Length: 109
Length: 115
Image (cartoon, rainbow over all chains, first blue to last red):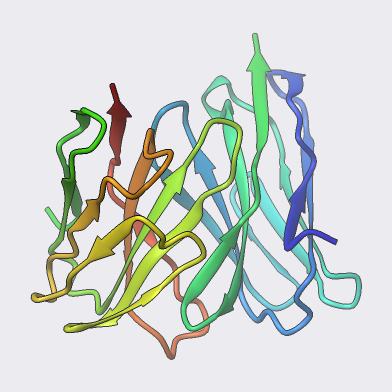
């Protein structure tokens, strides 16, 4: 299994749709997890830190299943401005992170 | 405004030249990081520093060098030994080791092109 693996996408959805991104990680000792979004030719920006079994922030819900080494991100009521690449990120120790390749989301009118 | 700055935004280099990319932060963060991103690829860690005057190699350190003389600054030198230097270079910082949720925050990046 790769260190961090994500659906490659792209995901094409209409405005208002609900979309879910999946991510698996290989290091069972990982303790913290994040979702970042990256707009085209820009830097990644922190979207959510994933706590315990999961957490919610407005339209965004992140879930963590440690037994299955699986993280998900759910976006409800998609907006045009949600179009971006979503990066699954896992802490691998010594404050270093491993980044997935990202899943591209395209929200259309 | 607190944040991370990188300069220049775009950099062109001739083969055989060394170039230095600047990264400055005023977030009072202890840890700083350098990544490179190639098209369609995830970020790969080049070097990181958890404290002033100390740094460690990441996954792809060959052909790169860094220094950490000040808490605020972590410049990256891309040497002529780096075989494929054309990439998007991203600097990040975080509060430092010890915290469980040690989020990293990124600068706007430098696009390096070797001519």
